[in-house]
Length: 380
Image (tube, rainbow, N blue to C red; front, side, top):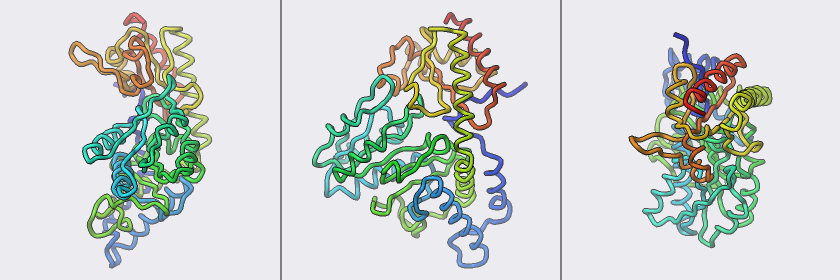
């Protein structure tokens, strides 16, 4: 049986062939500890530093501003908890927004138990944060603003550069979760003006379990993990050389082909969107900003249907993600769609389709036919 068409690249990505090739020596024979002073540590140490430079080039920063982590969740935790601890004498207030990933929202919730106040800003119907709302939320005790670069469910991209300028004018640090953006759109930390930025390897064709945190040289969050002092003391523990190498290569190839990849993904995303609209008319509706959106992301609501039922119908042919989950007699709408104020009859039938570099036009056309047939069968 043929494998389903994979349209869940925002969930995770397959390993790029170049990434696998770069990692292979460190799986097969370059097993040394990069902290070792003998011969076996040389190649691993050099590989880690090469990867650091590769990540830095993609983000347009200095290599020594990159700290390797276990992924986007750890990067977000380090950035937010680290700044809250380091700046506790200056204040105890953090600003974020209602559609952040749980790796940000849950961190803020945990900090509230330690006396850190959080303001969670609303978004509009397209999922956008208003910089004016950020400005209004700032207090004398505000120490950090954490606003995601792009949303994982609907793809809406936030005005991070504008918010960063506002933060800098008030002497407030700013962090952005760019896990969904890196490798899909240009992510330049200098242009964005951010102090901290999170990267997740498995969102850009690198392995799961590796990520990075950009930390501007002038910023000093508290250490995340204490030990023997690896990663210049920011995160102790023997480096995950195999996966760090994979992340470095993934960043290198992302930078080399970014514009063509954007064009490829956006063309396929729009092909699927237009096809479903042609087939189903006003029984499907777009979630997220029509323009300020990741080039690969398509969130569609199918009126009056249940997302899980649609997925059951298409599951052997198409892999996608739901915007709502059924639990016995109830339907739980995602916090993102709730925050955007999406009508329940549309939200409960929302699916996220996310294409990738490896997606083909033939797959898109087949997926269109499969989804159309399923929606019609279910009464859409």
